[in-house]
Image 1 (tube, helix red, strand yellow):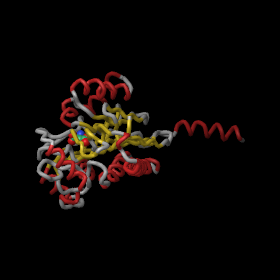
Image 2 (image 1 turned 180 degrees about the horizontal axis):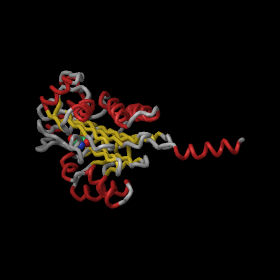
Image 3 (image 1 turned 60 degrees about the vertical axis):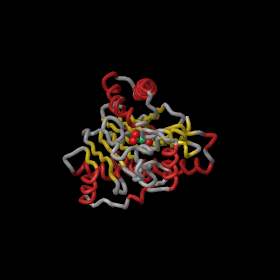
Image 4 (image 1 turned 60 degrees about the horizontal axis):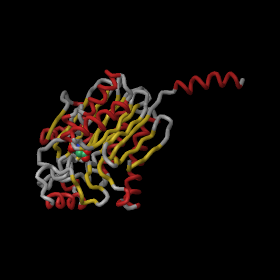
Length: 328
Ligand code: ASP
């Protein structure tokens, strides 16, 4: 009898479909010796909450699109990350948000840019994907669409925090002529990118990737970064990989980072880690672009790759192992 049970049980175990999730809360020069244990604990707590929210969707047989949304909502609603509440200010003192989501099943995608009143931009990107014939909406048109879809609208002040206000003042005082990538007002982070993103593989074998951001401190109003650009900040293809990026957006757009990594996996037949290293640690470094990515391949293997000293990141891999990290 025991043998019979083993014969049935072992094959079922090995046939169980893998599922996994990986998230990021931005990359940059994050300095361990300058970060207080309290601040570090806060980041770890919210990263853990976000990755678990997404993983629980997958564990219950839910799809990767819902998992990515649930993980990103936790980070958009937290003041710690540069997305939703707590996002960075433009030079003019407003918050302008960008977000995107892409499904690896059918390569459908949705994105929004420069929205100022939508509480959770990732939900609006999802509505664009699901309920419009378009891929990207911006500004007022995107907000009207959000209202029509019944999403929550808020005053721009909902996104404002004192910490980000001080960062803007510091960057302006340091007299930087261009959109600042240098952010020295947090003493534990100098050059800082704190966009959020998530990539998940569900039990049906579908990959989804999503990204949400306030962009870069002191950016010119109307500036759009890589995060809502499909192929730059976000990409998903069930045949190759799912990617969400964070970093100096202008470089990520020019290097078509997310698509380039998936294309290398698909056409060069290299593994995801090799493809990501070639793009982030070689191509981008040569161009002078700082940042990183998270990714998942169709087997559920999770990758983090960055060329900065740190990246807020977490994953629950296909064996169910939780991993939460900040520094290199
Ligand atoms: N990639 C974002 C942008 O350029 C910034 C970030 O990752 O924090 O808008």
